[in-house]
Image (cartoon, rainbow, N blue to C red; front, side, top):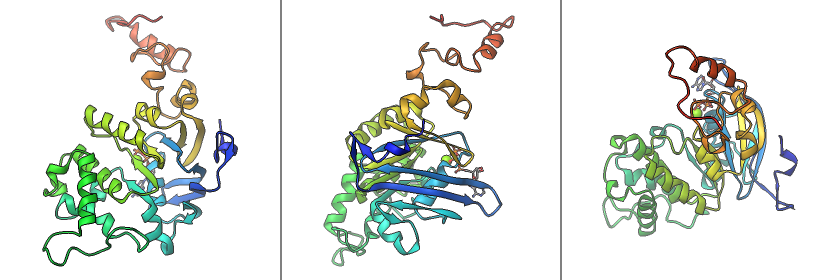
Length: 307
Ligand SMILES: Nc1ncnc2c1ncn2[C@@H]1O[C@H](COP(=O)(O)OP(=O)(O)OP(=O)(O)O)[C@@H](O)[C@H]1O
Ligand SMILES: [Mg+2]
């Protein structure tokens, strides 16, 4: 299932550089939990990869390491060829937009507008926006190019009207959209999104998917929303207990009942041949067990006919 040899080729052409490269990445939390135990993969420019795996697999830990908030015990990560290390952090963060699983980790300014502007104000000096300073002639105002980008990003996620509110008072879904706006405002080259659709209502989730489909960025999207992963990511990387368990075409990996169920996942509804929620895919290791439970007296039996 591993496609590592071909991961830097698109349409048979070799790519010059990877957007994300990770080699032997290892991380152990101070309490001794081994969250990543030697993870290796690469994502080409413009490639969209879904990061899946059971709770505790190490997906979020990987996003913290890619953004330089945690330092690896061994191995390395590179973003657009730049090693993620203290000396390169400003440059890495210029290129990498991250949404963390908990949006409270990145929303801490007095207003939503300030939160979205924060990333822009901390860009390095190669950026093409005004850096660092609010407009000196207008108290509480930003330079016009910053205002424009912040408002544009808030409009894209439908939160323009909330811009003067404290982000801590927004709903869970609104906070996630706010974190997305902060990323979009910076216009990075690479996106790492940790559970971007959780808490979103169906309309906001659909808009998020449609918006992502228009973006050219290389991206790694960690999620349990496997239908969204299928919509956005031709390739999937499966993590379990800190190791890469599978890496290859999304439809092959997520459609493999034995593989996904042995790693705490389920085949997404759209890939199920029987299209029922009640039973796992025919032939999967749990099918017989589920049938037995449903045939118990008083269980009501199956309500949807099996083909
Ligand atoms: N601050 C921490 N201190 C100690 N252990 C931690 C800490 N954060 C995470 N872990 C552990 O590291 C491992 C990986 O956790 P991580 O949050 O990366 O998993 P995940 O794949 O993102 O899971 P989920 O699907 O639940 O979001 C787990 O065993 C978890 O308990
Ligand atoms: Mg997580």
